[in-house]
Length: 615
Image 1: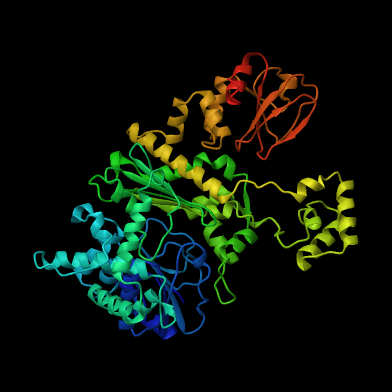
Image 2: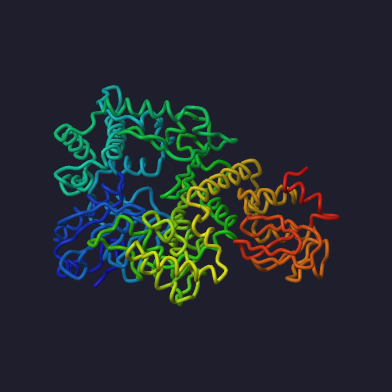
């Protein structure tokens, strides 16, 4: 039995409380998450539903590690301030621009607003739960609306609240709210009586910022948490480290960094780069393996946050589009998504189920229900989101996770090639499965399998030393660089109703520059960009290639190229950016599914040499 949330609250709340006399609230790990959970707790208890427990839910691995709720029993699972739904939740509220994974019959309230707590407190509840001042403060912090409230980086990064008699009561409350936010972030991983501090606060605090502040201050002292003086010193050291040359880079009005540096308790603040570079307009951050994340945000301390109409959400879409040729080649099956998602899950966790696969990815274009797979482009599109002032590309860690490869570190060295065998010989496959299960084989079994592989023409030595392929960190770095490049291009050349940024960039680059950047993996070419290059070079798309079109540039719709009866070398470039010099009478394979051929002879020889840095 699920009911929809309407303007005046949850419809038929009387029926719901008969079905569920108790509830458990799942909430996001930040100030809005905590205050929204407190507001929902008060609302449910006013309706006669006792909140018996709560749990933090966080994007990433922790999303699938939360404990299984008993939705068919007496405890109603409720999700607040979180954009990713799950089939198990009976009520789900959120204020972000978009939500995914929500089943049609889940009770929902999705309102685009400054914070989720103001929706619960002022719209769903028949009476206000948090005071107006508190709601305004939480909304200001969650939406980073700092300029309108004359809030500086130092105020946001401050750990200590002292009442200032020269300020108004409202201004003092704002300063207190900023400190509450800072302390929540600093102590979010600390425990109270064996449970997370934020969960303790939800179960024990009143819906009031003042009560939150006093409770946190008392607990920190009683439990011996890091004191504010220590955390301020850690913060100062962090600022000094981040100010070193090359740590945070600047191109045009865009700051960018890879990684967040060494962090001690209380040291990190997401706005540190803007504290060090107050004139910058944007920040792009990349976080490598195992996470795989790119985040872009406006400078919230500048008056015109959406500078010149830049929409970071749309730039994010263009970044993904530029990597589409590569990402479409990576097929993610359900079992790999499940393994990566459940890295921190236990037997008591909700885990990643087929229902989640259907809800999150079933509507994506590349999802194939027969094979239960989705390509990496659609996977990242489904997982990424945000709005014009802050946006994320998330899920990069799933693309090149390595979970599709066998674990070989504890295997006998001479047996490693067997673990990588992908042939159809059932005898060798049986030996491989025994190896992966028992982690050892007899000398006779190893020799029999190796000999069989050699008879199939398999290069056993190459399998014994597999090459390290493209990884999460590589892809994340490239996406971060692409985001910076596209963002700067748009800032410099803003146009009303402008065409997609990737196309405007493409038109201003020479063919050599575009191909060289594609080959370097820095800016993979889109389909439209390939079309322009083909036209400029008078190239031909024909699988007969040089046989029918000697000394012309040709596009071959295959990953395998034979140079039989071709008397001159070619430069081959596939759609993923990989390239090879192909010599006469040899055969070559590429990781992509199309190869562009440039003759290293005649009219196009100079172009080929430029691309190979020979000129």
